[in-house]
Image (cartoon, rainbow, N blue to C red):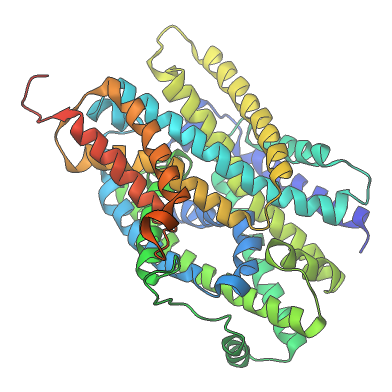
Length: 484
C-alpha cells in the first residue's frame, strides 16, 4: 500500500477525533479541562485508561521483547493487580475525602509547601520524560512507514502529531479525553486481535499449537526462578505493584481521570475493572509477541525488538492489515500523549502557578494562562522527542521503566511517609532529600556488580529509591506532638 494512501487513513481517523472533541468540548471551562466537572462515567474512564496505561510502547515493545525476556513481563502485570487494589482502597479514599483537583495538594496539607512543590515537580519531570519517549517510538514508526516516503522530515512529523493532539485537547481537556481515549482504546484492541488472528492463520496453527511452538522456542516462560536474575518473579511482582502504585496512583495524569468520576465507589470500580482487563490484554500482547517471532523465523525476518512488529505488519501482511496496524498504533499513541499534556498543564497551573489559590485572576485570565501552558508543554514535548531520536534505543519499554525507577521513587517516599506516619517533617529539607535519593540510586545501579556480585537489581530500584526517600524524611522529622 502506498504511503499516501496510508496517510489518508490517518487523516480520516484524525478528523473523527476532532469531531468527537468538538462535540464533547462544547461549553467547557477550566473545571471541565482539569477534572471533567466530576461527571465522567466510570466505565468510560476504565476503558479509556486502558489505552493510556498501554500506549504505543506496549503495542510495539512488549511483543518485541518476547525473544529476549519471554513472557516475563506478565510477572509485572501480576504486581500491577496488587497495586490497583492499593490505589482503589488506600489512595482514592484519601483523594476523594480531600476533594482534590491535583493529587499533590495532599502533600501541602500533610507535609508542607516545599514538599508539595517537590512532588508536583517530580511528576512533571517523570511524565515529560516518560510521555515523550512513548511519543518518539510511534512517531519514528510513522516516519519510517509513511512520511519518509513523502519526503517529510522527522521533526515535521513530530510537530504534525503534536498539533493534532493540541487541536482536540485544547478546549475540552479531561472532558474530551475520556471520550477520545475510549474510541482510541477500541481501535487499538481491534488491531491487536486482528493481527493475532492473521498470523495464526498464516502459520496454520491453533492457539494451543502456537503456545506449544512458543514453548519449544522458550518464548512462553512466565515465571523466572533464579533469585539473582533481574527477572526473578518475586522482584518482578514487587516491582510491578510499586510501579502501578506510583505511575498510576501517584500520577496526576492517571488520577485526574479517576477523580473525574462522580463518586468514590464508582472510581474504585473503575480502577479494579481496568486492572483486570489490563491483565488479559497484556497476556494477549505477549502471545502476539510469540506469534511474531514464530512468523519471523518462518519468513527469515531479521528484525527484532521494537522493529519487529512494524516490519511484519507493514511489509509482510495484506494492505488492510497494514492500515489496521497504523490506526491501532496511533490509537495507542494518542491516549498516552494527550492525557500527559493535559495532566502536565493541570499540575503546572494548579500546583506550580497556584491558579486555584490566586483570587486576583478571573476565569478568562485563568483560561488564557492554561492555554499558553498547554502550548508550552507541546513545544517541550517536541524538544524531548528530538532528544530521544538522538539516543535511538532498541527498546523504549526498558528506558521508560528505568526512568520511572528514578523519578517516581521520591513520590513513593513522600506519599508513603505522609500516609503511614504522623511525624512532622522539616519541610525545607524535603527537596534536598528527594534530589539526593535518585542520585544515590544511580550510584547503586552503576556499581551494583561491585556491591552485590552476581545479584542483579532490576526494576525494584524504584522501591529502593522510595525507601531512601522515606528514610531521609524520617531522619529529618519529629514526632507529631513534638515542637521543632
